[in-house]
Amino acid sequence: FCLHIRMRWSIIAAAAWLPVLVESSTGGSKKCRGSYAAPVVNLCSDHWPDAKSTRIWMVVFYTSWCGHCRALEPKFKELGKLLKNDKNIGIGAVDCDIDRATCSKYGVSGFPALKAIIAGKGKSYNGARETEPMKAWITGIAANRGTKGGSAKCAVGLFKSRVKDAVVPLCEEHFPDEKAKNEWLVVFYNSKDSAELKEVADRVAVDLGNDPPDMSKALKKPKKKRERLENLSEKYDFTVNLPNKGPFGMDALAKVGAVCCDCNEDAAAFCASSLRVGEDDFPAPQVFWVSKGQRELLKNLPLNPLSASSLVQLAVQKLGFQRSDRSEL
Image 1 (tube, helix red, strand yellow):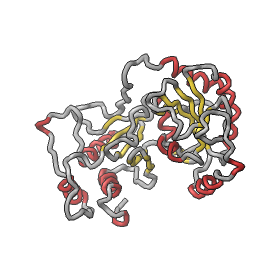
Image 2 (tube, rainbow, N blue to C red):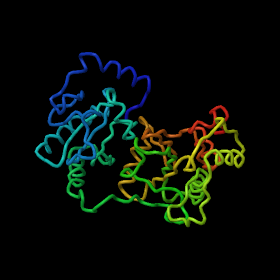
Image 3 (tube, rainbow, N blue to C red):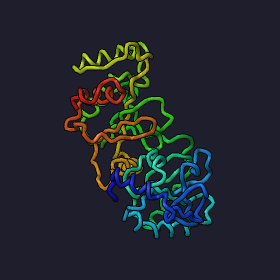
Image 4 (cartoon, one colour):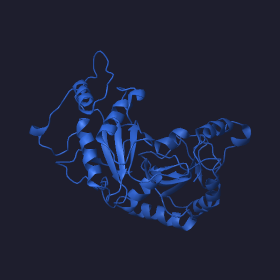
């Protein structure tokens, strides 16, 4: 996987406007630029399989400076040729130098990344980068589409109780996107991780104003956001910077979710994709801050052990109620 370097992104993105690089391929919409040609479709935010799409798409997210992406290209083109007459499957590609927004939306930060796009939702591929394994995977997904009926549930992992656990089990099919009303702290973990991690995550979820979904109404203790922030400041001994009035409302300051990385094959693929930044693979557990679909891996968060104090302070800081220079993280 290729190193993700911000400066390089900027240089390449700027260079992408040069005439030598903007030649449109015959692969797909004229709205999208890219290095692929038919039958692979160049995709972008203006031409993207959304929730109304009847086809399942196998999409490669790539950059022009990525050596592994160039190695994959002939095999991915062969996949397009093999499936060009399949009306249920589309084969597409996104140049992340050009369309950074779409790549960021799908949590792509390591290249190349391969995903199935099903009604606008991503499903990560973590198999061999060879034509036949990719073909078997995407045709299998197409064949099984709709057989479960309704939305698939995420593996609950450590958070099994809807009465006691305030943490929301998440997965790639059900992950906060740009339409999410709340900000999220999301823990990616393995089911064999200690019970202490579970206790910390649940404690933070409650601290931030979340209740278990099936908790008795008589046990719930709603608070105003301002009061909750003041209470957290006293509980964990840090300073909050509050406006003269507000924040208003009594809903949670932020949601807390968790992805079980070893609960099933799909979860393992999602975690492998999400925890890869450039050419670096980060081991679980890791924590993300997710806001309006944008994911930030919190690389500097102390994880051994993971503490409720650190997570709460980080959430308060991300929400804008604590300056970063005051953080103890």
